[in-house]
Image (cartoon, one colour):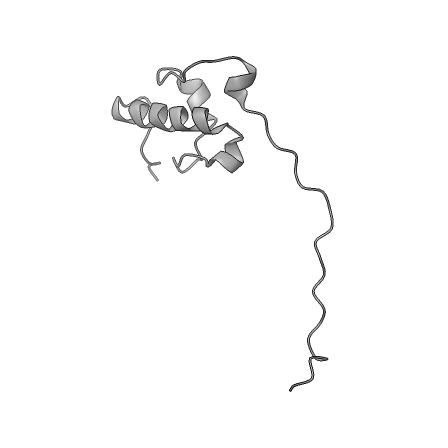
Length: 86
């Protein structure tokens, strides 16, 4: 058996977990996410054009699915870009 004295001990991460974000659509009591509301949809897209994941956007599962479909529809109708031109 080898001596494990040469490895430093792992420290547990101390600190609080970040507070869970509340779904914007649930707070405003919005039933469905509309693909024509481009201003709201832009908040959930990165500057590269990717859709933000649920853990980052803070949406509930139901509204995240609707949001994803709305963003994809808006892209097909050319309201939102698929990618960013450089």
